[in-house]
Structures are given as structure tokens and as C-alpha cells.
Amino acid sequence: MQDLGRILVIMGGILVVLGLVVLLAGRIPFLGRLPGDIRVERDNVTCIIPLATSILLSLLLTILLNVVFRIFRR
Image 1 (tube, rainbow, N blue to C red):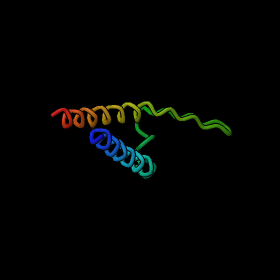
Image 2 (tube, helix red, strand yellow; image 1 turned 135 degrees about the vertical axis):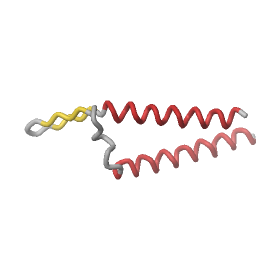
Image 3 (cartoon, rainbow, N blue to C red; image 1 turned 90 degrees about the vertical axis):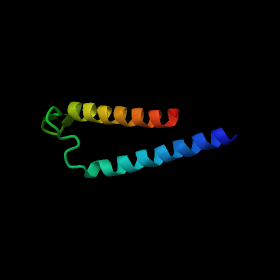
Image 4 (cartoon, one colour; image 1 turned 45 degrees about the vertical axis):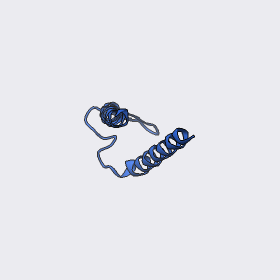
């Protein structure tokens, strides 16, 4: 039962951090406007394809998760 409780607390902490990241993501000025992000604007339609932002976030999350997994593997 203690292992389950520990896992639930860790997952709750991860959700809190993820929620804070989502709340603060709009305040990061370059997010979604990196070179390599595609933005198409027509009369009443705007289409944004954040390729460079997606690659950057993927790299950062991969590094972060690898560090977290190495810490908990000990």
C-alpha cells in the first residue's frame, strides 16, 4: 500500500508541474514563434504549425524524463 501511495503522490506532483507549465506557456514570448514554425494567414483564417517549437519541447521533455527515470532507478 505504501508503494501505491508513493506513486500517487509522485503522479500528483507531475500533474501540478504540468499544469503550471501549461498556465505559464502563454507568457513565454518565443514559444510558437521560432524560426521553422509555419504560420499561414488568409482573410479570416489563421493556421499555425509549430514544427520547431514541437521539436524543441520534445527534446526538453526527453532530457527531463531521462533524468527523472535515472534518479528513481537507484
